[in-house]
Image 1 (cartoon, rainbow, N blue to C red):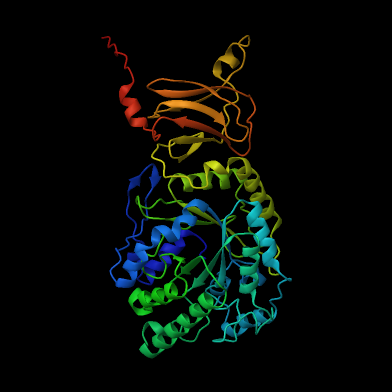
Image 2 (image 1 turned 90 degrees about the vertical axis):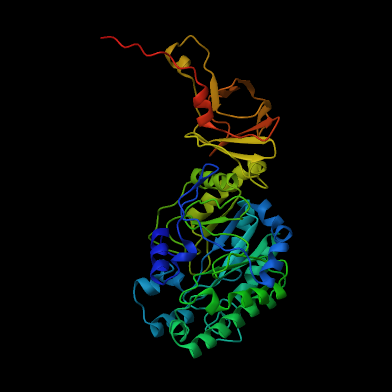
Length: 472
């Protein structure tokens, strides 16, 4: 993956693919739509067939909400980011030496899968081949693979078996761009090279779709230097669905696919379009020993809620060390998120898209007529308790602009009843402890009589306004 989103957009613009990711400034349901992708409706018979089965194929995915991305490869040995070959200008013969020194510990993927399970993630997507061109499986089309090089075994198979052992769905990341293949760049201008490279690519994907049983997700990445027509992407997807009829496929091979893939930012697609934010835990996708910009558990939980609120998924990346070990910070952050989900998963899994304004202290998710208030900044007291010490301190969580009648409220984790009052301006929840009952966010489950929405602008228009006196 790329070092940041602005760099990625700049890179794609330079290679003429900007039209596929053109920014379209908009606002929908309180979530940013900047950078929305301009994706055409399906035109071919194969695409129409895929669209007809999309709801059934994606039912589990919409329920899952949270997945683990794994970036792991020869670049992990360098430990300077997954783009280190290009950033540092490493010649191919020198880079190839890394393959002989890539020695993962036995069954490292089991640790990843067990962590994903503890973290409350429902599916895993592993880099089977990143831009560097190294294949993690026993390919018959190239010797630049895990079986023929340092590992001496099929790492994709280990990953698949590990994920299935934990009851997790299996996804394959595959980079179309290839820095290693001799035709990987010349294919742009040389038709014979294009034919060889497209056939090679299709052959590798066929192996992945054939050798490991049922695969749930195919996650294409960078399509440089070819267009969808040059890649013959329609034909490629038709092959994929012929081998894996229940699979879901993303939009990075130049076609709309089943879902959009905003990267390193949360960007809701239009209503009716599935989307998934992919994001790093620090600032790097691959292992980077110097990168200490770790997200806090609060940030992870809030991002997860924001994705669920917009009807999307959150694919959160880990970058294992060269031997496959999980960095200690990765463990602690994901385990904290998992503990939170044990008591609050009802507010995330299967959440519906929520139409609501922003809140500086809280986030929202929704299931049907139930609103979940994710209070990540706990109020702790009211001004009256501070100014007038003889009053009993009381915690009040107030939500302005709620357009639904509240029937009941409780703390989600404990089930403790929460008292409330409501008028045309706000819902006020009272009787809660001074200290936040849960970390990194306390979730309050609010049952409503209709689908809840929040509209600050309409509330503002109803406020009684005092006359302004003018003296001269």
